[in-house]
Amino acid sequence: MKRGFTLIELLVVIAILAILAVAVVLVLNPVQLIKQARDSTRISDLATLNSAIAFYLADQSSPDLGICTTTYGRFTAATTTSPFATAVSTSTVSSTAVSGTGWVDINFASTTGGSPIARLPADPVNSVSGSNNYFYGYACNDTNKYYELNANMESTKYANGGGSDVESTDGGDNSAWYEVGNSLTL
Image (tube, rainbow, N blue to C red; front, side, top):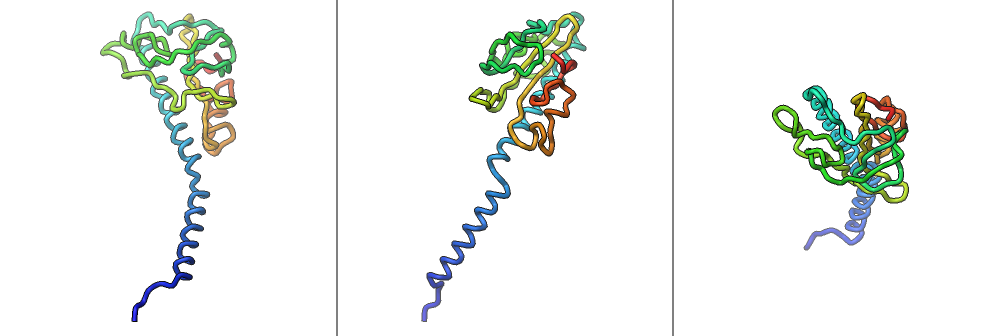
């Protein structure tokens, strides 16, 4: 006599597995996890770039922060939305060169021992579409040697009001953007 599973038993097992799969997807929310990973990259990128600029300022006797006016900002993607309070004139520069021609137009290669970073970071999404503004921004005041770097968070965890909110708690003047630098009011 052969023993095996009946059709009903197989259907019950398949139904249970389907319910567990749906529950796992709802609990883990893979889309939100991907957004959180990109936000972690943004936070890390701006921290690295902030350290590189601080090192450059400390290393150079006459540092040049690039094209700096109180009304000018540079972005990695074309946008009409400026996260900076005073930067209303903008330009888009997608280059990640560290020789002064990148979106942060500081010549990092002039630091003692060479550039502290191999290339400028680019936002993981780096595009503007509707209300989705995901790009990096740079503004500066060369006279006072002030600068600010900005990024927009994508996940509900790191965005304004999220569990690990970095946008409204960074000390800057724009609670909808993550800001780092030595002057967060540009």
